[in-house]
Length: 426
Image (cartoon, rainbow, N blue to C red):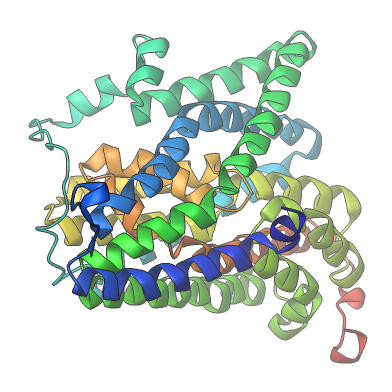
């Protein structure tokens, strides 16, 4: 047991992924494994092992409502520091929202033009019946966003009203000031507890990944594996575009600072974020890079980067848009422009609610998929490769925190440009 936990989780996940494919594909080609009379001549097929993956996905869905509720309330309440830092906070928040929207639309564009999920035969997948979408205009959408019963909203995992209710609670805590602090501590503690519970569930990832990849490889064959490969490639392409185009433009044209020196300054944070796939685990390193290497003042670095670790998840936002289209293409779900705008909204807000720990993107998928009618079976398809993509998404998120902090510090004169490090200092 000690040997098992001594292996980093990401290595266990990658090993499970490879083993699942290696066993699942020949297993499916052979038509299953037949047993003798002792077992009633039963045939064990790849579909049968999927129950292990289904249990893993059920645990993920279990976390959705409490994790979103506690994280969003705590995240909104954390913006109370805007009153202390004034224009710094509003500039940071504006950059977070705008960059998040650009990121999710980038994911939608990649998914629309490349169509990674097209051409996969899903006739062998057993799915629950999908309800027919009800015609709804903007008035109905607006009305349904208001939670008439918060308890019912949570029970139904209804996305928009859950988000609205969570944000209103956070705003209420801010308005209550000192009297709201005891409640804020409850939500802060609840957010931490839910992150710990999520980490426990993430320990099941290798077993879920093995079962799901064996099922995918054995049931859907090479076409599904090729589609998943396209999804991984597009995830990396999208993240690299965000980092080297959007962030570089932010540093070059808004902060008016050298781009090369910026990336040299955050190289340590990039390395830690990619290896841990956790924004929270990388936070101390990001703060150190911002203050020592980029010359950002400690108050600005602490506020913007700490807030960014909670609300600035551009890599996750991009991926939610991309993965939603992937699932829609896999299962033949037609999405309208209204659905695209809903995905853009929920992708941004869902990324804000995502915990800065490995696997958080999987939990957010349940929210976005359910809102636009994409089958949750998509989560089972992508769960096996999520860790590979999560590493790059986290690098994007952490780089974005540093980029926004640098830009805001430059705009407000809270940066020592002379401390921007040179190549020899790395």
